Length: 179
Image 1 (cartoon, one colour):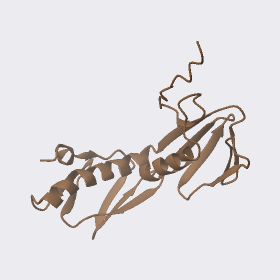
Image 2: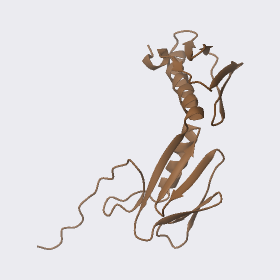
Image 3: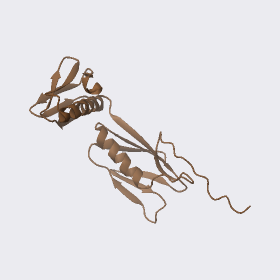
């Protein structure tokens, strides 16, 4: 039994959820999102909450039950509040700069790294070493943050590289030298 799928999704004021055919549409103050869903799952839209139901107790229906409840909850939170991930750049000479939709990164390579911002995501640079990725779709915000981090992941000896704001990089001790 899915414990997550049984919980109703609370819909705040200003957010509308509509279900038509196999399409789930959520509209709020920050934008709108759509998601297709499996016909084994159905949605009951109430005044202030949405209940996710499954058609039968097959393994596929049970596995989709909690998934679509979580996706709907992420969509409702995204159009009402939005999502943000912050990246911190550590290293001598490492810095970030935003030119329109292109993020220019100096990461110790011989050339600058250019990252083109995809649609539906906003990037902002605070100082020289903080990059904020924000948007309404949780999956796209996480994917963009992961792609930027992948350009120069943090290394364990000096801690240089790009890391998440809340990430803890385990440091290693280097060579001990001759005694």
